[in-house]
Image (cartoon, rainbow, N blue to C red; front, top):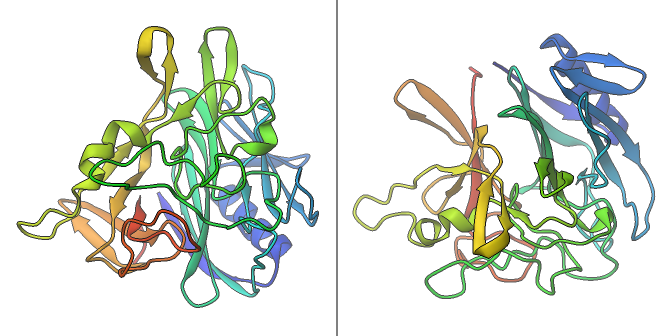
Length: 298
């Protein structure tokens, strides 16, 4: 495990820093492709401003035993009405087969991306879909409406990105409208995340809605387990992401490090913490929804 942090002056500088850090941790980089085990990840900088590909770092995902996924997650602005102000701070958490990149921009806003291999399936996820979102609201998350979170869909299902890895159940035959992908091999599909309905949040939704607990104000770290809805209202769990967890950050601060037993975890908001509106439905913040990434820094 390794942890890197620093400052990037633009998307190219950020990508170069990420590639160098991955190479230091035994990822190979050749012909524009990061590879390790069965993962083939081609990250590239996009300076486009269209509905099919917007600004940011786009991750083209493939495997040594599968074709390329049509879904290309993107680390970047979630709406064309927002700009990312450089320089930015970056935090890289790199493990044997799993990489997480978090970017802090402005005063207290965050972007993120993750990729690698989980349970012998290549995956990638990022804070934004490949295509831009026109003038619609960014960073939306239909998270807790009442006692139980729903699917976590963008506010109208199509016009903005949801906030956490494998959070949204929105699917489209057009991979530009999705931000998560993982190898499937179920029902004749090579990759999930486009046509196949893919999510992870729903399994934990009753507990997420009740966190943190009122007894001691602690927040539980919930596993991220991407799964598919299949015939007869059943689900098939595809993998468990090993080094990233969902959690509520009501009583935690961004970039705080917590220790659970022998493990340390670093806390990040999904986008931007807003304690006054913890159960964000629509808006340019993510309430108190966040993630914890396993930490091996100082």
